[in-house]
Length: 415
Image 1 (cartoon, rainbow, N blue to C red):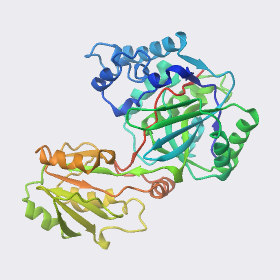
Image 2: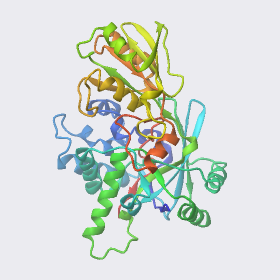
Image 3: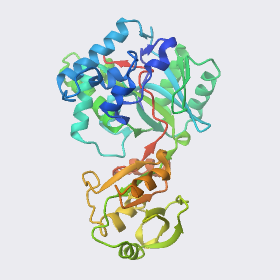
């Protein structure tokens, strides 16, 4: 069962929360972050992307960058921009996008759960990215950003959250992308104890939805601290890391699409003929065409949209990974026809989050940068959980979650 602990969070002062809360570190590059922090010394990007306060040619993985993160966070605390809660709390972090609100419980996920598989993952991580985030945690001595977890719905937790959000939110603001962010503090001791008890007795697993590298980094650093502490008791704060836990039914996975640079020497007609070996192909024309169900794809090629429906023999309903549309596309087109075999490293393919819409696919092809685009039907939370439960890993760039969690609404100290 899942161990989720309350913690004494560092939180921004109410009057500046909309200046402090920032986009997460991995959704914008250093140049974009430098622009975003202009005129805003409070932005949490100064902590999660501290290179914004260093020369542009700085090595992003050097000690000076990680030390700057620590310095910048300490400055925010010393300047009174962050205050620490006096006793361990849980928090409710809700986000509203396109008229829909999802409600997550912020708490300390257990390092032990990460090590023993109670926290389940569905993606592979890259060692270089793990090490970068591990160094950030090691030096800054905080979990600066929460990771995004899901759990199978629980009526008792739903009741606690529903009662909590009837009260006035501690923070309530809307960001420039029209996403509403709402945040409540749960510090009633009986309620805090009840939340911990419900997770421990009724929530068997939690699932990494978004933030696999941050999860791995937090878990590995916590385990590292445990091994290096001869007086380890299990009660230390480094045994936990900050996560927002959402009921799975509230989450929506957005499509994650592909654009291709060349057709591997084939003409357009030859390429379409190859596709017809495994798909029913229907030419739509110039009107945008969005996939309507699983195993239905949209393709944009030479100014036209096509609907592609996979033949039954291209997938096995009993194979949780093979039945995914990203797997079907790879196994029938990308690999055998286009000779794109390593999605993580190939320079002939790129990935576009569905939040950008079909217009972005059309734009990249019409510009001549790419030659074809494929739009996919989104993966379901059930598919994600089935794959995680079976111990399998999804292919690269399968899931895209929106909205993204804002950083800086709560910070967990490892001390």
